[in-house]
Structure formats: C-alpha cells, structure tokens
Length: 303
Length: 237
Image (cartoon, rainbow over all chains, first blue to last red; front, side, top):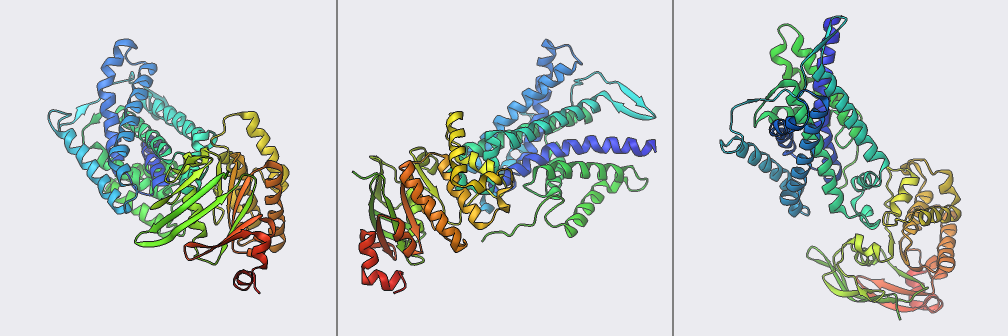
C-alpha cells in the first residue's frame, strides 16, 4: 500500500509537469490549428534560464528559500514568454495564410534550430549539467511515503499556475477573446478583436507555462541538457492528444494520466525498461475507444 | 451625403472574379437592401466591406474615410457592424459572453450595461438564456444573439446577411420587425442582404438588385416591387 501511494505521488509530480507543457500545445492548437513542435524546446530553454538565473537570485534571496525559487520560476517564465512570442512572430506569422503543413514543417525546423544551436559549445554545450539546488532538500515521511520538499513545492506551484490559467481563460476579457478566436477567427475579428494580438498572447501564456515546467522539471530531476525537451515534449504532446487536443482541462488531465501510468509501469519488476512503450500503448488504447481524446468532442472538420 | 459609398468594387477568389464593379451608396438613417439570387455576390460584398475579404480594386468610403482593405478590427472600430451569414455565434461561449464579445471595443462599463439592457429589451428570450451555452440555442435565438452581439458594439451602420436563413417563418417576421425598430429608434443605418426579396423590400426604403457580381437595378422599394422584371425573377410572379 505504501509502495502504491509512493508511486502514485511520483507519478502525479511527473504528470503535473507534463500537464504544464501539454497546455501550451493545446492552446496554440486551439487558436492556430497546428502543433508547435518548438514548444518542447521552450521547455528546455526554461530550465536553462533557471540554471543561469539561480546564482543571480541567490545573491538577493537566502539560498534554499521558497521565495528565491519562486523568483527564479517567474523570471524563467517571463523569458520563455518573450521567446515564444518571438518564435511566432518571426517563424509562423509570415506563413499565416499558407497551408498548415508549411507551418508544421517550419515548427519542426525551429525546433531543430534551437536544439542544435543550444548544443554548440558557445551556447550551452552538449553535456548535461547539474541544476542548482533551489530548495533545501528535506524529506518528510508520512506513513512510510517519502515526500520531498521539492515535490511539495512543485505540486503547489503547478496547482497555482493551473488555477491562474483557468482564471485568465475563463474570467478575463482576453481569455474570452482567446476562446472566441479559437472557435471562429472571422467572427472574433468582426467583434473588433485584433487576432494577431490574441495569438501573441496565447504564445506568451503557453510558453510561460512550458518555462515553468522546465524549471520545475529541473528542480525535480536535477540534470538538464539541450535535448531534454525532446522526450518530455513528446510525452506532453501525447498528453495533449490524450486529453483531447484543443481542450485545456483535457491537457491537464492527459498529463496527469500519462505521468501516473508511466511511473507505475516503470515501477513493475521486469517492465521498467518498457515504461515509455507502455505509456504509448495506453495512448493508443484510449484513442482507439475515444478518438477525440478523454475530454475532446468529435468534430467534423470543415473542408 | 452618404454614410457609405462603394465605387467600382472588384473582388477575386483566387483566379475567379466574383465582384466586377459593384457601386452603391447608403445615406444615414436608411434601410437599404441588396437582393439577388444565390451566388450573385451579395455576401461577398458585405464581407469585403467589413474587411474579411480583400478588394482587388475599387474604393469604399465610410463616413468620409476610405476603409477598403483595412483589417476587420479597425473597420468595426469606426462603427460598422456586421451580422455575418450563418450567424457565426460563438457556440462554445455563453449567451452573456457572446454579448460581452460584441462589446469588446467598449470600455465604459455603464454604457456596456445600458447596451445589455437594450439588447435584452429587444430580445427578452436572450435574457432568459443568458447563462446558457450559445450552441444550445435554437436557430431563431441564435439569430437574435448574432444581432444583439453586433448591437453591443454600438454601430452606426449595421450590415445583416440573410437574417431569415433557416428560421421558422413566424420568427422571421418578428426579427424583421426588430430590424425596423433598431433603425427607427436607434437611428442605425441598415444594409440588408436577403434572399427573401418580398420581405426585404417590405422593410427597406431602397433596394439594389444584384446579378453575377454586378448591380443590375437600383430604386426605391415600392418601384422595385412593381417592376415586372423584378417580380418575375425575385418575387415569385
């Protein structure tokens, strides 16, 4: 039983990070109907932003404090928001009226560009680095289940970010405009919505969440490298599809489900090498029975 | 002095020319209708005026300002509202949120509250359904919502594209009555595109008859209704 709870906890914290990244995929899909493959690299850049920011922040805030970790997190989010908006402006906006496939291939190109530039020794270099410890490592023992302070902070921050996102999307003017644009861009334009501005805002929001995911991932797993986004980003993309692409609660749910399934598969003797395979098998099974994803609604594509 | 003046408008969809030289004018306070068969270019004309479609040539002057090929969100800002064909309500938002979107460019809270009251007085049904997801409304209710949403932006000039489409005949009557009411009480100038020419010419002061991308006839409604050519082609004898 404790074993089960321990795995569940580990799965949830991994899933929370998938959820943060998956939201960016699904939001961009919602307004532009394409998959921003460079999103996983924004996640990586978030982790590196945290890596370089941590020593600077440590000069002001006592090291190991929650406040310091939050400042690192927020700054990395801001940097990633700017990066995301820039990518959209330079790479995707000029292709707005082109076939979607063109944009999709461009997204893959942007992703490769970031990955290989980052591996250059003048940038980050290819070898993994150890992420600085932002919080004092302490482990609480609750009935045999070990909970690290980092894990708790990751949970709380993820919950706060998800609540914040829900508020922005559901209760603010710009959030309502985002939903309107995602439903019908032309109708939104007729209301006076500047579509480009909403798209920039969507990229800022999604990229900030990916940046947060990067920092939280680095805090939990301590090793960062330029290709860290490839695997994690792919999983988060799968999570977004699993939940129903374009659906925000779906992305969060998909992330959690995937994280938990993957962790449990990894915890079974003899199966741990197949954890990714099992996670993807679950995806295939779910999509077989619910092709639109867990919370997605089947939509007839307009031709 | 016209509020809207369109001169020699040309529009292409790809290589195909769909409007070849449309000219029309609408004076302030008028209800003008644009009638014609399916595919004559009526909707394209409206979509070009509101900026959804780019013009290849020609000028559009609204209230003394050239507006051809401005982006839609800047044209709305000038007071030109468009209730598009097929209504295009935000089916994923509530009725209330749809109306809020209509007031997207309005910043004065008391003015917005006043517009809500006005729209609800015009269409009490919308008030009853305020918290409902708009996708669950009936066709007629969705049309009311689309008109109400456009009114929330406090337009001086309102373009309506086929408001009778797919709506029960009884409701059509009511909606056309509301259009006259909006025009008379609010002084909003109306450009109405309609396939139901009989109905359109009943409420409009003047009309244009369109055929395959150009204006064929122009006259006041009574004259058009008496015109034998119009009668046989558009009014069912």
